[in-house]
Image 1 (spheres, rainbow, N blue to C red):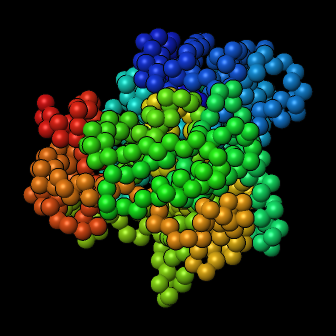
Image 2: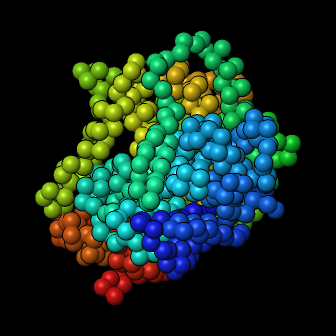
Length: 589
């Protein structure tokens, strides 16, 4: 896990070394263990390293004997098997990243399909005089780029491109509408105008700084379901899951995991317990409020059954007010998901003793866990509905006219694109979530909140072999009698019954609404008169909203609060103050 960035001058222009310096400085938090630099002609790369595998010889850039160079962020978990397949000829390090360089030298960009991992990397191919960028198929690791007539530049975080002076701080209105309505943004164009995301599974080939080829690797096929009986599927899942967790545990440093009261993390801990001789350390977030369900007791029982070292991390109302400005500042690609807050504090605690944690992202998407999937499966006449057909600000009259125009266009495009082959309604909904919700919400959250503390997050459910198994299960093994993740729950009931996998869960939540309501009179005027909010909303109505009780009103207040703080730090460039109130009160400075 690292930070990477690069600059390619077009038409053989020279590179200003200060640009690479600024990119490196902006990504320093991602790689506290060292940094590397590569400059050859019009191509310059930088990498900041968080050392996980091959601590001694894995510094980057890595070089092929033909002179080509690679920088990478992430992990290629099947590097041991790939090295054997490549006969280990010419390997100069024990780094997992070198396998990508060797695969490319032998098979070109087609070789990247063999990788199992989370990654974003760049190769300067001096033989073909081209640069290749590649991102893993689930989008676990992000890569952003800017293209102008003079240069092409890329970085692990969008804020690095801004900090290097390569792009401005202008908000795209259609992306802002998405953020306000559904808490994340879709597609290749991020919310900062001029910055694009490399899409999940996408590979770009550039010559003279210009894109000459695009290719996309897909891990969710459209071949339809594979027939399976429950007993056989459980046996096969046990084998697939064990292999994925075993690969995701490959590390030259110690690792831990994040444990909630849910099925996914309990399954993960159960498998880690099977594979590890020593106790696994599990971190659980707890909340200091009365309005949310607290699953600490269940997490304790699961941890005890697995002989885990269980660490409970309390997230208080004070944490909410003091950490939120800093968290919003670090979400350069914004996600108004309140889970960013406990994730940030969990990461800070885990980073005291570990460099790697495993977590359960992806289980809901691949096994059909969300309630919205069950709604999609029902015919419209029987109460079914289209996913995300309604937004946070529907029937809340605070925004200026036209602010929300086209907010669902990106989601609709994904629905059209993923509705193909022999996919069922459920499979289409899962594919839509894997296209945008997963990479542009959950995985951005995981990356930014963990890497802010120099901590690597690994997701064993998001593995090509896991996806090939789970996604193609028949619907009856994903959802049965109104219960999602049926197969995964059945497996957990066999392996770890004290996790109560079929008990009704209330889900992971944070009492944001309760905390905001308690400070609504004080908070409303501060939010209402922020520059970012004045552009989009009537301040009088915003103030009133913050004193209006109701679940929907609370969600709208949270989105406005997050956007106000994000806009102030990422668009206006103002540093966070001690807490939410001081940060908001500092505008205008």
